Image 1 (cartoon, rainbow, N blue to C red):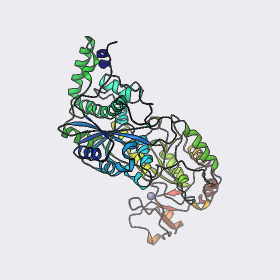
Image 2 (cartoon, helix red, strand yellow; image 1 turned 120 degrees about the vertical axis):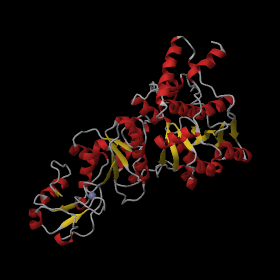
Image 3 (cartoon, rainbow, N blue to C red; image 1 turned 90 degrees about the vertical axis):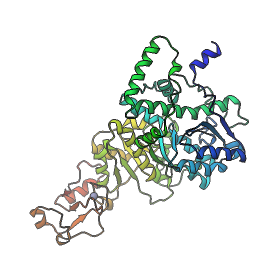
Image 4 (cartoon, rainbow, N blue to C red; image 1 turned 30 degrees about the horizontal axis):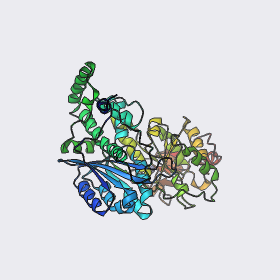
Length: 482
Ligand SMILES: [Zn+2]
């Protein structure tokens, strides 16, 4: 096969996109200027393959403004990762610059590890951010026009589906920790960031509202052209999105990515707390990177605080479980059900809340789990809410304390106001039946102002406590809810 034929099959870096290899202080300055003037950047990172705790050795940023696109390669090994900290932090938090990545959490972790210490916090907020992996999956699932079906091979699958060309991944596992990097490695690394901008352009052209019709027409043209045997590169390198389109895409798909506490600088030593079983189990389960459904990190176990309590966030499919956990006094937030076109947005928000509030996501949604939005997620296998409660208590080795039973609002996860209220102290808005009013004079109110749900100890209260205490909750607690 001739070189021409090869280049027709593989995606290449456009010749007018210069590469800035940052190896010293003066090139950092050039990079800073390029990044500060950007409207949109594609971000990727490389590290030495087959290492257990990835530490980035190269960070690639494809930066584009209205006049040009260039690729900045921050060579952590040459210039030192901490020297790039300020530049990265400014970039990640600059609301005027859209950041684009492909499952960026792994990259951020590797960058944080490389920078180390306090400086690792520079990756804790990325906004606005669009994840090509999740966006493409979402649009593809909703059969958006002009969005190709991904063959399921990660980035190269989406490049093929969207740009009609192959992405050469042969250097993915080359030695990124050695220096000097060869010209092919630099070219490969630059392309991995550049392709994110091309994919964003392609998705914007196809799926931004108002553009969908135009995309449909283009798609029809392509089918005709392909039918006549034209090389597929006609679909590569879509027109760069305009500033207005980038703004619209940001509003529609952009999120604030918050990464809280999950980034450890060093592998954790097993501590001598009483939960070796669950910790060891999760470590083993998360060792295979493709294994899904077990959290790779459990924030309250890693917090170092013995009094740290389990905290969960249940997605819309496990709302019943959330209420069961709250009845046991366990902090369990709810997230709205993710569906339709907004699904990926809901996923990202779920991951973002879980990350910033140090919660483990409890979900039965395997689409969410497989997409690996967050490492702190547990796959709930059982379907009945009471079985689910037992499953989660077992999986996380949680012992429910008697004093925490019925100590939390089952409706909203709020805590109760400290002292019980008498009838006379109840808010005027509270409507209770005459029967309840005549029989009770001790009421508990949810402290959440938007909720203010009233609870009282009904006849079944004692039984409910017993049932809950038995931990195998055969019966839901029989509290009366107003
Ligand atoms: Zn409440």
